[in-house]
Length: 116
Image 1 (cartoon, rainbow, N blue to C red):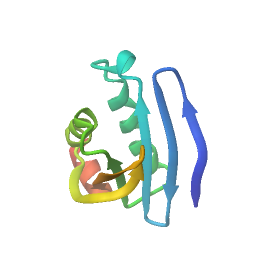
Image 2 (image 1 turned 60 degrees about the vertical axis):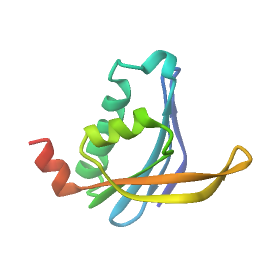
Image 3 (image 1 turned 90 degrees about the vertical axis):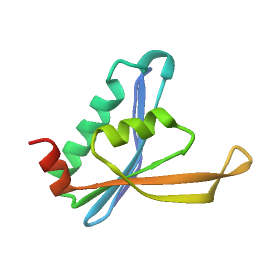
């Protein structure tokens, strides 16, 4: 199942491109740093999506792809319990250049244990 057409957008946050397989889900988000910085909006949104994917869609594993230069998003993913699983060098084309990509993930049982 691919929900890449789904976009939830406000002036603060855009959630897009949720890709769902039988056992896994991957989602993308971006936020307006002038509005969201330090307010906890991103953490609340990402946590809500993860809760929904585990609780309602019964996924086994959630994956997040992040730009290695986006330190705030990396800190957020680590703060909510996701772990770095990979750093791909020059793995995708963006803004007319090859760009690195980092993969973070969390298993359902890890999420439950960290939120108990």
